[in-house]
Length: 362
Image 1: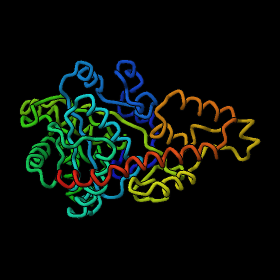
Image 2: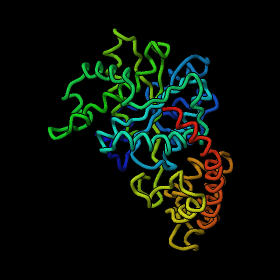
Image 3: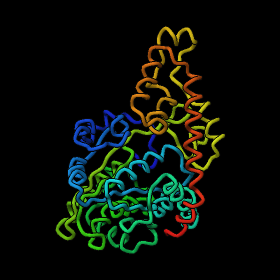
Image 4: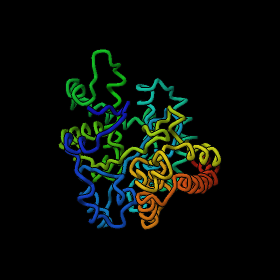
């Protein structure tokens, strides 16, 4: 069972086999100008992405759904979702951005006022600073609590499932509060919303998520079939990305400052945190030179892969030099710190203007 509210370590291969997730590598050659996260295996799985990809290649209409549960600070692990949304927007997608304040109220006991403040000043501001254009006509940004159409759709979705089905997917028990049980049905409505007539009617929708969110995708696909006669809904597609490892080697988390680099931190703090990150280095320099580094267990190398290096050849050289022992961990950390400062300076240069735009969106 996958818990979308308390995910921890993940066996990606097991999930592919157990839940019928398809391997993204099987269709990467059909994707025109794939995102670097696709090429590098960070996006490792999908459900029916081939159907969306066909529309992208034909330059036909489709939608992408992204969102946030505003319960903490935005860190660089969240950035990879924004990078994907931007890729889809550049491909012509209708963009639907949900702010899951009902879910944060149910699962994190977050007030609606606080959730809106975090959504605007943390998430939407940084989404815009990272390059998303949220002012286009084919963009829909909304708070769950303020969207009557969404709540009506969630109510209809609730009629198409029962407690035993939700218990099987999420592990709910008799002590689970009803709001928490209702939250996944609101997410179903979030994912199906772009297919309503007011947004152009039924269309293919893709949802790029971490694999911990797959329970919501499976539930939505099931309910989409059950609502097909009334709405003509198509089951949503999805892609699944690996989690960015935290600085200490565990999953990066908003609630654990020691594991995360937050996007609102200043550049010097971000660079300093990079230098504390766990590497794949050996016990001694001599051992490093003889055996090579453990590049696949290195948080610094992962930062290069996910965020800091666009050039595949440059990345491959770093990997090669690490494995043959000629690259020292200190040199890698210095390079990563420098690149992190550049990235953060670019983000911070855009944040003031982005915050003004964000405040006018919801």
